[in-house]
Length: 336
Image 1 (spheres, rainbow, N blue to C red):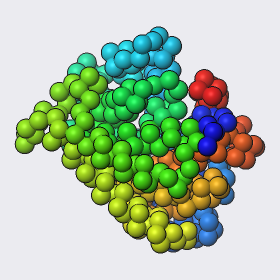
Image 2 (cartoon, helix red, strand yellow; image 1 turned 180 degrees about the vertical axis):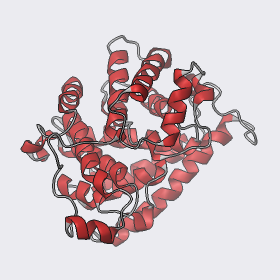
Image 3 (cartoon, rainbow, N blue to C red; image 1 turned 135 degrees about the vertical axis):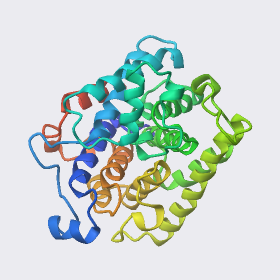
């Protein structure tokens, strides 16, 4: 299949739409969501502008640093790392950073702000969804080699979340966005993702990650990173189970998990998209009507749907109503 027209804009706006729909349903049970918003959950972003959460804010930070680095080739970790560090610190101090941001991101960014080297500033035991809910721009940027895309996806995660599963899940998220924008059929994604896990299982991107792997009980970098890939393979098994049932009305968290950790956020967001591959609004509404981390799940579902279907698939009237619309449009235009 040919590349998707305006996939970058569709992805950037889509993740923000999902984030906005899922924000008011987070921490609610499915029954509570349906009582408040109806059987199918929120129908559209609410407010003018419709507010997003730290998921979109941090995605914009990743996008800003990435775009700046790409304007000064060649693209290397030494080039993008200080840009991401600066953008994460700016986000930390932004007065709009009042959307209940994750503790892991706050702790790591405070350490970065204090001048701590990033390998020590990161939260080594955390694999929270903050690692990959913000990685979509790495999947949108054209012209990267597979090594650059994988290394960059893992590095942006590692600045705050040092657990190997957060790294692996971020790479899978970025490659899913890239494959979809390049025209891969949604039905082919599970097999492609499994192959990626198996082929990369012992690949440690030292050029990007330095000695992040060094910690107790880790004899070598291959042992460290393989633990992340193994957990991602396990959640892909759960995704296969959920897709065999293909229950569009069930809580998407029941099989693939609540999404508080990176591999579950990836799998559950992808499940919502794969249940409605040609209906992006239904995909993000399914993510919003979930018992877990609904804003991150719907955010990822929106990123996948937008990368697959492009900007034209979203309701046109939403574009002027979402928060940060000008920034979303700017990055979409840069990568489309």
